[in-house]
Structure formats: C-alpha cells, structure tokens
Length: 112
Image (cartoon, rainbow, N blue to C red; front, side, top):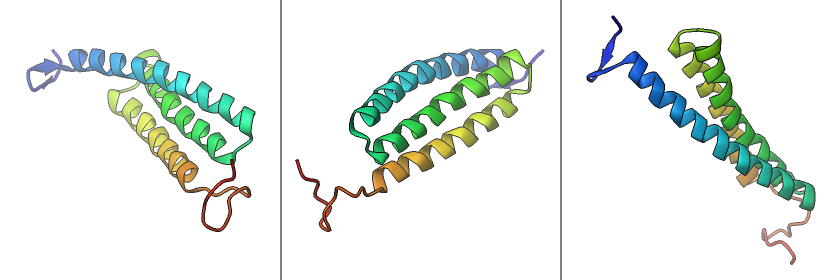
C-alpha cells in the first residue's frame, strides 16, 4: 500500500507529473527550436541564451522523468534533477533578458 497525498496515492500523483512533464517537454522543445532558429537567423547572443534556457527547462522534465520512470529512482530524486535544471534554465533566461549586444546604442535602442 502506498502513501496517500490529500486522498491521492503516489501512483496517482506520478501520472499527473508524467502528463505535465510531457507537455513541458513537447511545448518547451518546440519553443526551444523556434528560439534556436531565430538565433541562427540573427546571431543575437540573447536568443542563444534564450534557447539554452528553454532547452534546460525542457531537458529537466525529460531527465527527471527518465530517472524516476526508467531508472526506478525515488520520485524525489527525479524532482530534484528537474528542479536543478529548471533553476539553471531560468538563470539562462534571465541572462537572455538582461544581456546587451554590441548593436545597441547607449540608450538601449537597437537600430532597425
């Protein structure tokens, strides 16, 4: 018999986590590809950092799920791996928003 969390078993919660991580992986992966294509088109380092950040968040969902579902590690280990990669992804996303490129003037306005 498993633990119960607010009336739901660990197995019930695991199903919800797998579903949410699947959506995160698919949507995050697609947005990562869009950001990567935009970086290749423009060469802007902000877009590269955006792609890296989104990729880390999406890969956290993948690796956390693999560790829990395939390697049969405890749920908390999978969550820990996902949380670390998510945090690193948000750091890269923050950098992508704060980075300045050489094409900006001192007022922060880019030429068109």
